[in-house]
Image (cartoon, rainbow, N blue to C red; front, side, top):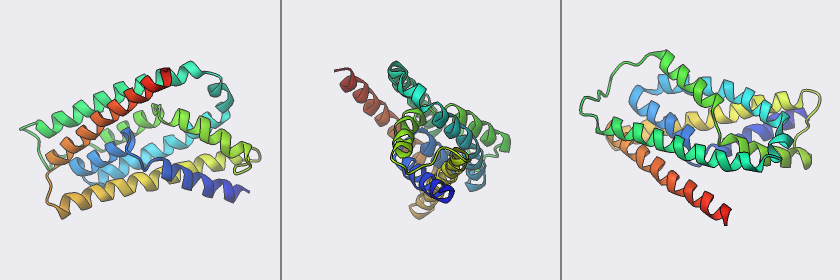
Length: 207
């Protein structure tokens, strides 16, 4: 059953990070601006903290489920995060002094991975609903190190998905001879679109 926990976690979290969001778009931006090595540092750091984050969420899934108002505020937090990241990406794309091969500290990628790994509001409703469903339907066993193994699997799934985004960003950049500025602008536009999607979600959920 522990192997099943591991496999289910890898698959579910891999799929969970495929839709555009703040994490995979950040991986794309880092890969484009700083290179694959820096992106790998970010992805690895994020995945490690994702394991702890997932474990805590599953431990307190029922508590989160009883806090409906928390989900409402998390939706607004996401709007703010998308806005900040979108504006940052847009400024990078429009910065005339932006250097394609500018050197970045490894600590910057580690620091960003830690911050986004700890402060990842999109994952709270994801695991609150998905985790409860998987446990209640017998897909995941919660005892005998079950949650610990599941958390490790979630980290692996996140790592694989984000690494795929980072590699894909470099492939697109090289294939179509795109500049980092162009990719930054594209990432910014996607963030701004996500803001409207999130606002629409808030509006219709309040009706």
